[in-house]
Length: 413
Image (tube, rainbow, N blue to C red; front, side, top):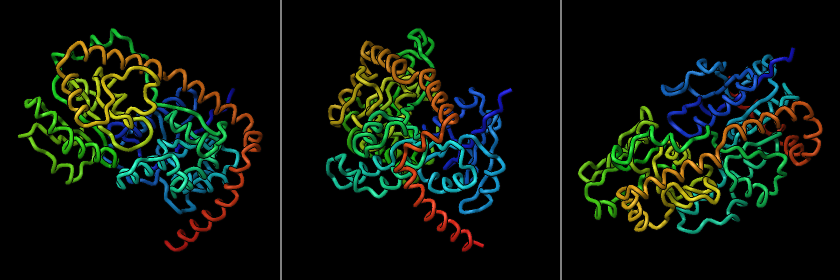
């Protein structure tokens, strides 16, 4: 009888699938490994939150751990996982050396979520009112840490093909260390649109996004200051509802009902809200990865208008489920047209289904991920032998990170 394989996920935070796309992706990963016979333990040093998912309902063991504490060493040694998945590179920096020391044979996988260095460099260029260039990445401090983390791991999960190309062409990462894994959803048939609210049954524009994520706050600012006044000028009865977890006071201050601009706060059920809306507006100006809110809109049969950054790597060469527009005046004009023209709206819905079925099929990618993981489990030695740069970084980082962590632990006593 085959021994049950163990997966340890070390999370930056506890998963909140109703608060962020990152939480939804984590639950997708858990589902894939559970369905393929892995026993899953999720560990985090984060505080519990009111909105975290109940992991026990998904058959996942929950474990609270501490930063800079040898108690983790005892825990991981006893668990003895076959695979360890780090959620974000900062977690690999904190715990990677401990995993290597206590469980050297465990396969180490990094889920990048998105390339943090890309998001940081774009945000910096935006704030400096200049055009972002790929060359900017090479001078980013975050890039040095993030790329080192990718090299130290056996495999890194990359959510965007654009980011895959950056890693291979700009940073020269061996593609054997990378696996393209977008958001994963089930196939959607055109008939399913008939079960969703119709054009006539829907109303209002909507934006939805976690406000702990800086690009979301910037998007709402841009909507309020540059785009919404143009929409209201030609469409005075228009209403925009802005939803998002963790809104700060500066977000709440944008609430202005007399101008049809409503800050609604956390969405109890984001899916239901998006299904009832007629259009999703997402004029995103910087960021990285894939935009979960835009994929969710497609699943809900809700057309969207976004920017080239918002749609990046999301639809291959297929027509968007609405419009892609960077100019505020054109964005506003197309938002009104899409809201008012039923035939255009219905065609945009169909475009969304085609994108879902071509770009985000769960079965295609999940089978490849498990096959790759199993191949590493069968012969990790050979795979690691060919990753000299990773071994080199591991050797030096192991020492520096280990002694820094031990110093902090001793200082905290």
